Image 1 (cartoon, rainbow, N blue to C red):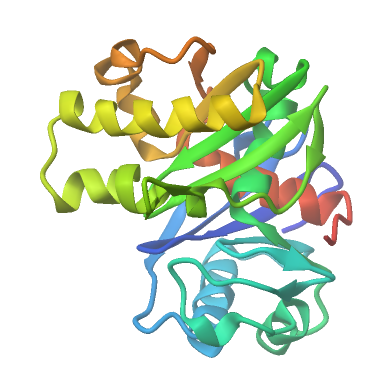
Image 2: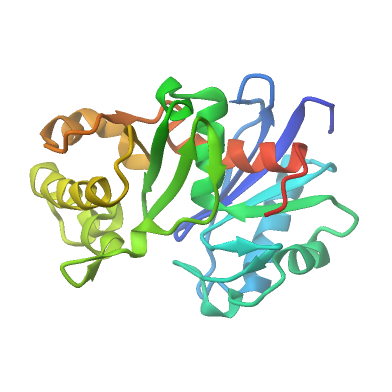
Length: 252
């Protein structure tokens, strides 16, 4: 199934690979979301096979956008966060083309994809001044926007804070793994946001990822002066942004 205003996005995460058909006029899903557990190890070949299976289950034969937890330059993975290190140096387009032959493919950083979707269909403040979009999940993803324009491939989750990477301190996976209460976890998030604010002076933080669904349990506990606003698209954003990238021929 293909039409001019529909697209497919695939969001590759540390725990699951998710995809859906997206209405690119509204940002809404027009299919059920397909989710398959991320293979262990998450090698390029193994992930490529799962991405192809998600597309097959969606019965989609058009362009495909894929959001990866990696810095992507000229469609080549420069880093690998929460996927196998074998991705580093891999031409993601060529690799995925072996699993989805004949398709137009766009591969981009997962947080960039989510941020693009939020700018297009979500929180209005993501379009204004200098906003930082953050996803809290297996790691912490980031996307910088200046008046709605993306500066790609930022990696704030790996910024060192008191000698510890930000995502090792305050990702939602850390909350789960260490069985932290929302109160205790919010203190860690607050520490991270204070450092991000000190360095980058954003006009707003837009926070996404699955844990943003429970924003009322932790956002009010934050003391950073910058507004912290839950993303409207929540955990759908990566899929929507990847679908947008394929539709708009975005290839960082």
